Image (cartoon, rainbow, N blue to C red):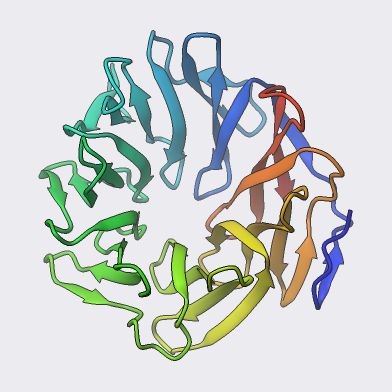
Length: 328
């Protein structure tokens, strides 16, 4: 299967399968040297980590459901979600770093805590928190020496936070009422907040439902979709104002961008069709995968854009899946 899009050509590069079986949620460290993923079992799931050229190691080995790992720049700190099975609100954020004998809880709110991101040094973590009734959402920030704080208060709803590599600036999406665009905001180290894309921005009239920043925090990429129309992927350089529509397709998700802003990845598909991993590199859009069955999901780039990892999902069953790696 080929996805028809202007300027798109299939990739001639070959990928490597680095994990197979009951695997999910792959990620790569900023330096591209360490990989991590979820390894599921009948009643639990664990976090596995692998450094290039070495065998995988278990980060967790307990009775909890651990999933969705993220790594700091050199892979020395791992942060993930943990579920203790006492209720739907029991998803918390845990962190394991150098010198830690046991994982430490950094986010354990009354509602579920999901989708963490971590700074380069591993000492700042952001994630999204729901209230127990799921009516409220708050972007949370944790610093090693300060503990956790919310980046908004009700009735403002904030979600999908990101953290710059230096840990100083955090980014999040303010969720707007119906018939209005979600806004992407930035919070400085002193707590000052400002919107980066206004609702009245002529480039951004549609609803934003995903965004990412690069490690330096100076490139912003996001997805917009207008009702039943196609989704559009944009990138914007915060310093010089460079703006570009990168791609358009019926479905676009799981976006990422390198430090220099010149390499991007995402998944795209037609409704009901296999999702494929796309790569923007050296000014060209490349279709990385060409699977007739199954789905490709959650592509992630190293900071320099030279390493790409993603998950291939089995077309008929929950497992076996594959964690795939491509050196660019």
